Structure formats: structure tokens, C-alpha cells
Image 1 (tube, rainbow, N blue to C red):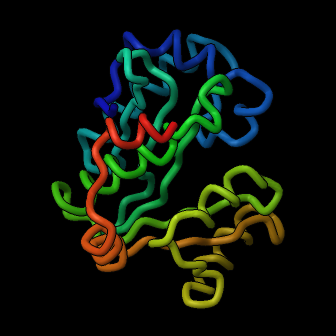
Image 2 (cartoon, rainbow, N blue to C red):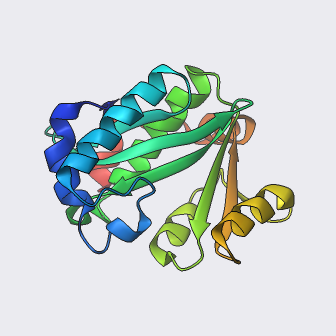
Length: 187
């Protein structure tokens, strides 16, 4: 379902990223295939330095369909960035990827907090985040951080959501941990 980023997946990912329903919401925008290759190489190097964590999302046949990332890692916290190619929207892959990535972050890589900044105009992402029972709206509890994000963006652009390791762990203990196969059956 997830694998470390590799240059060999770049063409497939670039083609998916360029869709007009996907591109505006991608954090690391590339306007050419060569630029996408360069950004992917930089991403791999940044992960080696501990600045971010990035994975390629795969479908059940092992084909690349998007990426999931934790950016700006600092003090055991970072910002989630996820995108899926348009043909894979609404098919359950986002939830499967988040479950696998969150488990890796919290239980293997010692991350304590995952933040999600979501543009208020991105209705699809807002609805997806609000469905997650272990997510809390952090606009008030992390107001200073939200203010920094919005100030840097030049206006009231974002909502801020938070996933704590404790809340995620409580959710997985209460509901049990799903396997990829369980999620794919639901999709």
C-alpha cells in the first residue's frame, strides 16, 4: 500500500498530479516532468536528513496512485500532505493510506502529533478530514500556529486539524486495527 519514494514512479505520479482537480491542492507543485523528477530527488534527500517523511501510495496491483507526506518535522510533529490521482478519488484509498502512514509515524518513527492544514476552499479534503474520528479541529487550541499559517498565506486561508498519537491510539484500540484487505473490501 505504501512504499518509500523512488524516481522510477515519477512519470506515473506526475501524470496523475497534473489533473486540474488535483494540481491546485498539491503542496510540491511541478510544472514539468523534469521539475517533478528534481522535486522527487530533493524529497528523497530531505527524508534522509530527517526533514520530512514521504511515501508513494500504491493500488492493489502495486501501481503508484499518489503520495502521502509529513512535512516540516519539528519537535516530533509535522504537517500531513496527501494527494491521490483523480481516477482514485472516492474509492477508499485515502483512508487506507492514512491508516498505514499514521501507524508508521506513531509506532515506528516516534512522531507525536500530525497537523493538517486544509484550505477552506478545498471542500473534498475538509469532508475527508471531518470523517476521521481521531482528528480534532485545532483552530482555537493551536491558534498561534494557525495564525502563522494564515499570515504566511496572506489571509484567512486555512483550517488547522490535529491528530495526536494518544487520540489515534485510543481510536485504534477501541475500533480495532483494519487491514488493507478490509479497507479494500469496503472500497
